[in-house]
Length: 202
Image (cartoon, rainbow, N blue to C red; front, top):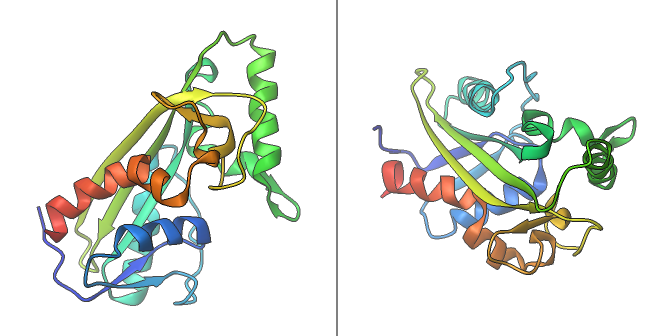
């Protein structure tokens, strides 16, 4: 397991919501967080059909272009009644000619579940794969998952993505109803991040 030795880390995302989460998770580390956006990096084409495959594309692209270690995540929601969909295509379900609209993605999800007469509870998982890559091509990989169920209608205005329709196991509220800090304590991203920090930063 390779340890992180530098002082700067590129987070390979143009998604401000993800960037805020990662910055919060790194708040106690003496690491300067740079973003793909701040470094004016292009968004690489994600050609893989797995979370790890797409995370590797993003992390290695950012690392090679900047000459710095880069962290990328690929994440999404997998719904059991939809055979794991949308999965790696989670963000694609939100695509519109004017950009991503997750209210449309959540509506598509509900329509797909209705079409297959999915029974309740409609079990699902938020999944995250983190890849920390170095310019020499080495990488380390960490996974996290948060189990729960998909509900309808959406509840809560906080969070991003599918948070308003995802209720974690053991909770009566959705991720969209949680405070930023409370969600960060249990999220799929924080689970993967804790594995990453223990292995590479502590």
